Length: 454
Image 1 (tube, one colour):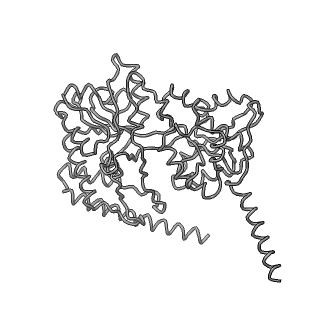
Image 2: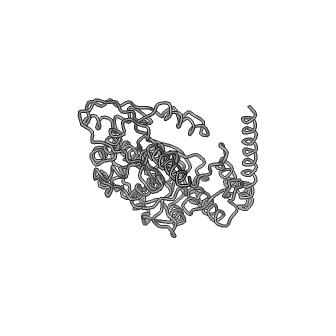
Image 3: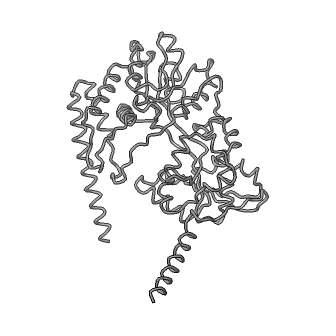
């Protein structure tokens, strides 16, 4: 009797194992080679149909001419409230069932845990897909998101750097910036430029990105992120910027802004003072390269500029917190067209597309360094120099709508105006931040109770 029960239990375990194995995206399901003349429809998620075909679709259909690419746009997600965006994204996948999913790293982590993506390690090995010439930082980030395995590939990335005006440094006989400066060194360098002259003619040593608001607060957070600091407690219930480290950062920022060395305008295009040779250094993303190139076509004399890495923490000189993977594609584990989906991803992240896209910089850069384009002698190597990425800490329980930027900007502006001491400013930031945080948590609690009561 015991043997029969034991045999019965063993049979059940084997059956369950087989069922779970067949349902998992890590099964032995083999992807087949695809005939280039195949007639099929492949559904691909992307944020913009026109951009998709310019970047990938037209190239892919030249190899698979009978494949119809149906683009499932995610454009509408930008109009969805931030706290509801993730649910809307997941609903889109469930409703449209794309073969190829476009996603971000954090979305990949969630979908991998749900067994919603197909693991690529075996087909990468089978097809000898070239991973050696992809930026190691990209592969590492993707493996981290996939729990050690690859569930997607990416063709592009974006990052930030310090753009600098070579002519201004020569004019004032100041040594130019270098890779891997600290924030303190950068701000001290900015303050070596003169601050005299009229507002319509004077130069500035530094400017933050012209795409950010509350630039002083943004700089505080950027320096804090570089140094690996958190502005909230581990449980995200309390603001924690009343430390000596945060105070030191705010002192540096206040000193730089109070000196007049930092430009605070948000002018863009032809009105951008960097383009007018009036800002010595600017913190900007890789997209800024294409803006400079566009303006150069309208100038009598091209801008004489260079690029160095973003400032770093001396204890971690190869780490950047401004590295973001773009155009990350994965295979839907439920797709009936996995083999064709793999052909698309392999093609999009391959050398042929990288070579083609290197001729049309649009703000993101190839994950394959061999295809870095340095037009007119400008160097883009700074974007590839830092080899490790430090992510911004995510607080999944933090109520939507919580921001400290306005409080920091207002308080530090009062310090510059000699209305507050720095200690008073920090206390004000804490008081206002915690008051807002408590209010939002209470509101979140009430909303959950009301939802549960329905």
